Image 1 (cartoon, rainbow, N blue to C red):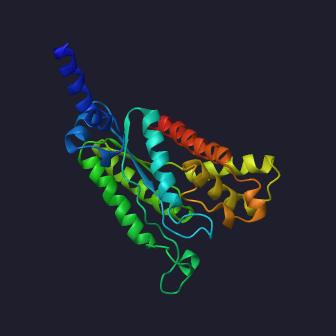
Image 2 (cartoon, rainbow, N blue to C red):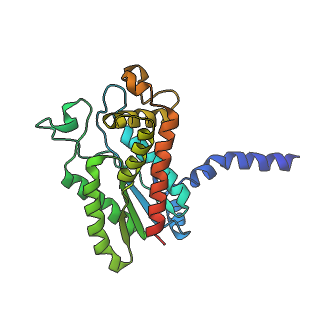
Image 3 (cartoon, helix red, strand yellow):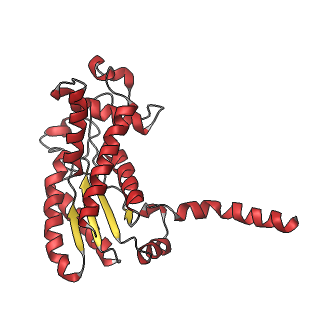
Length: 250
């Protein structure tokens, strides 16, 4: 009995470490665990660009980052051969000096296209240099798409002769297309799809409304937005990304 109790105690004490080592998020892992994962076949790195900008009075500024972290994790878990980098929380969102775009509103953080391109390139190089053979770039923010698409194309041309590949996945465009199709079927006007999209996804992320203020939603948005819709939108993005990545990464 004493021996059994000792075994149980040892297992219990090691449970947190075991749970941590199964994560697909690189920042949850030690360098030894990352190397072991790469050696074990997790050779696809997921780089997701979020963004920090206003979304009106009802939705938290970090919506893109929250979604990027969740979707990246789910993609990596579904693929089985991937690890996800921490999302890049900064994206182009207007001119901070001229106060254009989202920079007209408090809390928004904007970087230039050149800065985003440089950071994205450096993250990809870092991944390829430590043993990942494929880097997948995605973004949850509209203005990000063209930048990382160009970076991925240039890097793929540079690294392909060296055995590395870099791909851009249009999960934002295709995920938005799915979202619009769902809302069109509900007779939602085109100009209201984005507020409903944002609110619903934040509802799906937390039942305590930590990232959405329901009392600040316009009546027509509140009448449609829901956690169920948010889960449908998120599932669509994950499905799009997994299918595309599997087509590209054999």
